[in-house]
Image (tube, rainbow, N blue to C red; front, top):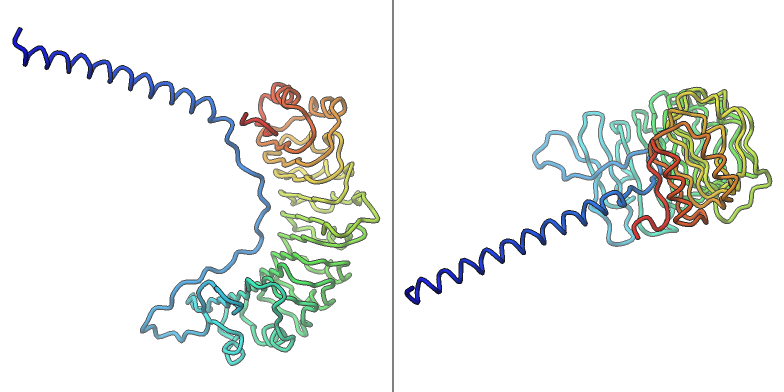
Length: 359
């Protein structure tokens, strides 16, 4: 055989061996990926009740006057975003410019700052409430507010109000004048709700985070259109009452219910009457077993139950009563990996996510 042909034959043999080895490597990697695929799981997330208005540049030459806008701040300058009733997104950098703005043309307005402790003059807030007669969405984020202005006349426009990371401990009784309000997101150390809060009959979504109530506010049970209700206690406060009122039958439209960090160890029987409930979050409480009023609900699909001091025997017995499928989150509950796997074997229609499942 000529030398050249011999060399070519050797190259072909080596190339075939390389292809075989490479193919086997690909198959091994694919098998490993498939094995780990189940271990990837989503983290439980709180519902965002009030959307933040995104800033976009104002088109040059537009016939509609620009009132507000600002890029994402890199200094202590507040960001002010707005949308007019005509759908035009407009921006402003600086509160001083805002003081001379015509608020009667605005449909959505958002104030935010990246610097904690920044304040807004009470007169400016009162101007927004008085003159923003077309506003449907109002967001005030991360300002050191100690009081929300009085709503002096009935407001039939505002549908979504978000007051987040402020310092409010109370709300004015006149909040009941927001007769069209459908969504209220409040992340503040509220110590109480005014009795008039019960008059917000159109409210459908309510989030009260970082609250400092000494007892669950019963005003909430008058809001019979609520479909989403989330509460989370401020970590600095300690509740004097760690039981929920047995009044949840008054909230028949609830689809999502979450109460975190409230030192709960049991749930009232009336929660079993919530026939539309699909998501239930009772993480960061004191449960030692899974509540039967939730276990008996076959419609539940998303159940974060993390950071509860579960006791194995009572929890195992309670799990055997579960009728729902979907996602069940059990991280940081003190159980072993073997115990978690036993729970998964019992709940054949439910995906159980737990500590160490990626190991």
